[in-house]
Length: 129
Image 1 (cartoon, rainbow, N blue to C red):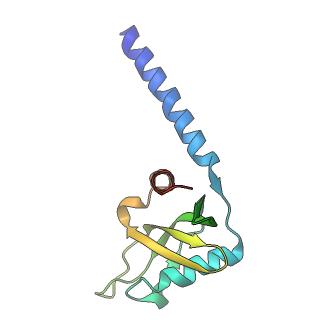
Image 2: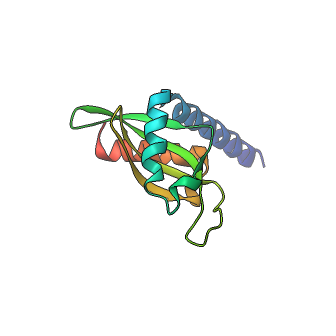
């Protein structure tokens, strides 16, 4: 019983440390950058005019060929091909500041902020940055 409690306590501390270090890697986007993300993400939707965005964006800084960039996560709700709203779904993509946002994925499975940021960190670590 004591061993089980120790393992649970150590697991909780590890999860807390991982969570804290994950969030410490996020950066805030400027209003201009948010505008670029929204503008370019709309192009990937079935009904761009129906897009409603969440009020929080998370970004992880990276580099592509020496150019500063960000993996960006957020939430979007838009109409699907049948005309109904999908509910808020997570999105992740790459933002080249002051230029373009390239959506990678829009999926309800990445609507959890912690999961999306972990995915962004994984992408950054895999592809350099």
